[in-house]
Image 1: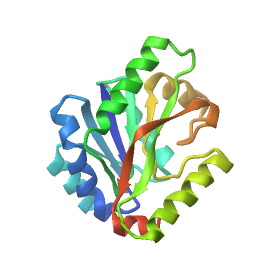
Image 2 (image 1 turned 135 degrees about the vertical axis):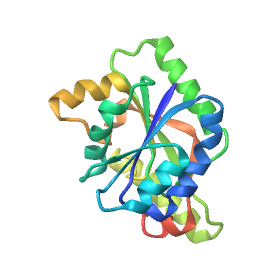
Image 3 (image 1 turned 120 degrees about the vertical axis):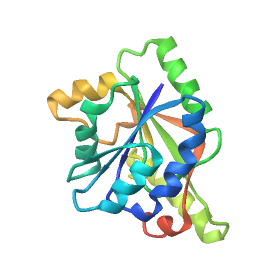
Image 4 (image 1 turned 45 degrees about the vertical axis):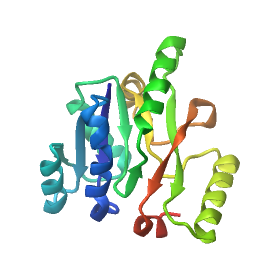
Length: 194
């Protein structure tokens, strides 16, 4: 149902935690393939991807450019989930993603939507809650998602935009759907991502 793409290059030390949080969705058959796209000089990322059973690709550039590099290898689903290292999904996130996909297919939206997961810090302090509030207001004011928010794309939209080279890991607010289940950032990663 979903192909996973992880554009490595930032917070790569948290890649094992990110991948391990996605294992239950793999076991349930929701994630059908996983592709980790890393820089050519990073053997540790290649080793982690291999140990997790993911396909490892080498590509330089931004997260969007790494997604482009992964496009030809995506063969097993029409939906692509892009998750950056350091993002840890909560249990049962995949139920919300599946419900969104079913709804999008049922409604037959003429333009494939983008779904973004809400971010929530793993910390318990007031500082962490303040950071979440600031992030929420930034979404409302700028109508853009945080770069670390996982996004769920329809493959048709990516392929269409890939021809025009206009695809970005962002979407206008009118094209974005916010999924209810939150994604947690590990404490160490969240300190320099907010």
